[in-house]
Image 1: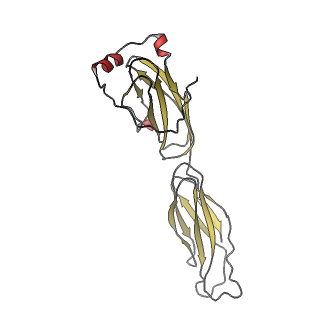
Image 2 (image 1 turned 45 degrees about the vertical axis):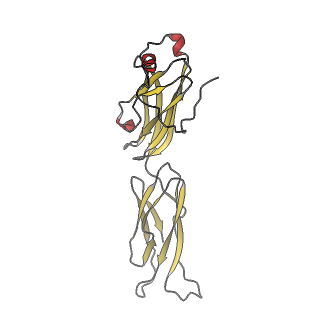
Image 3 (image 1 turned 120 degrees about the vertical axis):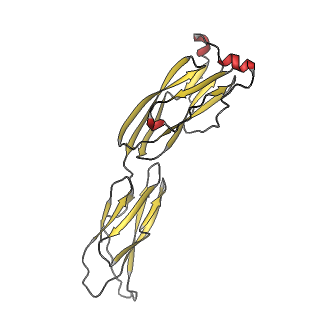
Length: 232
């Protein structure tokens, strides 16, 4: 059967040091071609797909040992975008599968691809690929303009409308609203929207003095992302 592990499944790492002389001897052994065929690893490509800039994402690379003896395995990482990954060796006993956490974080927008080496028994080097597309933080809003009107029976001196902020990305997005005039306020004016959630904010209009209403704009600044403007 083909070894096709799920890279989103986490697993606690195995010990990094041999538990006995037998295990140590196994882990120092040079393996021949037939023996190496009994070690399966995957996935051959870890694709993080689309990630927000300056966000952390984790996947797991799995190595399965079908030899009679133990092996040691580790990842060799040189790219700073993968610096928080798990690089300690793991002792993989016969019949076990280990998972190595690959952590990706980039401060640069664009496409990324990189080849990672993994080393068996400190002698046999194999490779797999890591890919990602890094985009600015993207917070979507459901309205580009609002109409703030007082109903005929309204006795309050203020009226409000809601805007929904949606985050379909992989990490939290932080926002801050700015109103140009003093007759409009936004609640909450600052906040954050976790990944794959949405948040409603209230845009509240309270006339100042008896000035006639004039159209203005409110702006949402997004940390590491594109700003949004709403006509009010």
